Length: 71
Image (tube, rainbow, N blue to C red):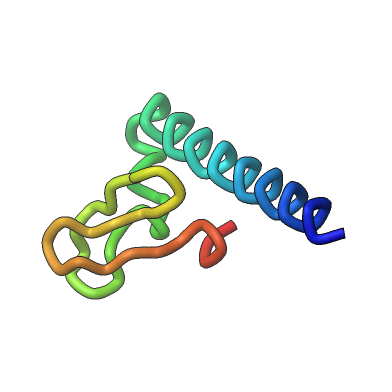
């Protein structure tokens, strides 16, 4: 039973990561529309957040959002 829950949790994490990466890629292809995605900017210092695996991270102040925060 625990193995089934773990594999389900891993699958959900992979789906969230893929969805986030797709959103970032889609935004970068559309140019100006990317600027409209508020979740891609740090709420503390307004720096653009960088995608690192399943996180969006601010290089300036260290703020981060995990995939569970935004998916």
